[in-house]
Image (spheres, rainbow, N blue to C red):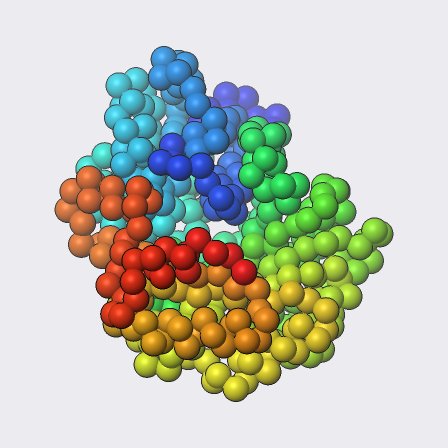
Length: 395
Ligand code: SF4
């Protein structure tokens, strides 16, 4: 497509965040890989205002020449995204599109500010359709919302690193390189936005060959293979491991899977391929809370599996949630004590009440997600100090 004349000009922007980000996988996957995909069909520029700044007039000049402005929106960037949309609309020409988590969760509210909101499905398809045939695309809008979920069939793109602020990213990632390898999920944990964006009951996989070539051709001390459940499709996971294990020197990588989706053979294959750490979303060990968030694990089996991962020489890293509605101090301490006693690497993260996003009627309501304070959910019996201490310490 690169020899096509009169390519459309597309600008991708990650809006300003209130604080510097500590993890970048959404920037790489939602912004960078989408830009990589769209660069097959258009002349693309990428800006990430969470790590770089720009004069308003310079941004205006860029937008003035752009046909499209594409903005992935998270809850903590929604207000800044709307500011960007306002700026773009003063150019009269630029067509402004919202996609990502908030677009999926409250498309109606965003539709007041954007020319189009991609509410459902893999946005690659929708954005490509818009660029190639805007009339056909707009005919499919309801209001200005695009609800059509289409399966992701094209070859996945790599992040458009040469147009992204990699030097700034490296300061945050300490040499780690991220790449998305799965999207969508067959599980339905109540606190997770994945299902909202990709409603079909399916996990889409990047091809093992693509993953292999990315790692082989982009030498890095560490890779983060961004997955929803790495070991869900065992055949695919073994193929990825087989290919990665042929790279010399062996790449060092980490990923995420579910603790109930592993066995010793899989963990051995991952270790052999260079995996050094696996993230597990444990969230809580209290059965009643597990039920309320729709993520049930058998505690005995969970502990056995975590120990098995350790025995095989991979670090299990457990993610826990603090502030789940109804959670008590006893439940928090129970989970914390088990993690401590097992000698696990773990970290608590505060519960973010995503479920209220669809109820928002005013964009300013998103300010509550700007991380200016802690949510301070009322965990019965837990002092403020204990709450903050748990969040502050990464073990
Ligand atoms: S298993 Fe993970 S990705 Fe899937 S719904 Fe639950 S939290 Fe989300």
